[in-house]
Image 1 (cartoon, helix red, strand yellow):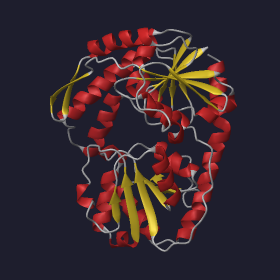
Image 2 (cartoon, one colour):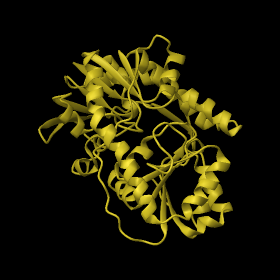
Image 3 (tube, helix red, strand yellow):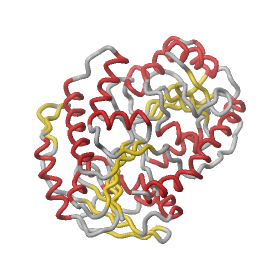
Length: 386
């Protein structure tokens, strides 16, 4: 018996199909809070087509059945002040208020063997010590993210972002201290957790993939490149903007940039021909973008493949990312080294035929297939050993 707690919204470890196929859980409770609606958690776990049928907030326990799996959805709408807004884009955070909120929220949790929480909702579950508490940590702890930002950009982050990251860091440590096991997506993430909590029981688990779907090739002339993710410096979007501005080859392709706003302003690209700048997309919209793209550009500063890269591979879309152990250049994707190399590789790719990128994307589909076939067995064995 264990509680699976998803702390980071960047990727769900388990999908509804994976839970059922792996025989991991018989039922699951999805828990939302005033920070993250439970409908969003349900969307990530079950798909947007399921969550679209359910209203955005839940005052009481709401149960649905999905292919024999029982999903219970609870929204704890306690009007506690987690974020004190004192100016337009700045917040003041108080960890004691977080803890009080968690204690009150825990009292409203239903008796459930297995619980899935999302983003800021995770901490309150650690007051409900029903079985093992398994926490997933898919990114560096916030203060280590700030260090990475400073080293790579040689600038100080904004005070509002620093306040927010300090709050997240305190909350993450609060949750780690109350967990039995922390699942880390990358070795770098495990190093970050152990740096701040040397005694934490950490285990590394490889990145999961959903069921891969080979897309059909439709002949077209202009290449379609895609960036999907937060518009922030750590995601490397500044490299894309610079390439679009300095390279004459960039006029040969269409580029879609989508995702939530971050700490990098791309408004200067909105009026540029061939460039479409979009906001946050839902799951169905993202899937359509992955299917239509010839190349997913993933220039994140960390040398690790992230959610966007794997989601593109799940659709047979080739990926450009920093050099890593999974991608074999020009076989199942494309890689680059430093910033100057990124520009030369982008120029090379802008002059390729769509059929060539589609062929490389078929190789990328094999990466996703291997991860899909092995992940559920890996996590079942891991959790079974706890």
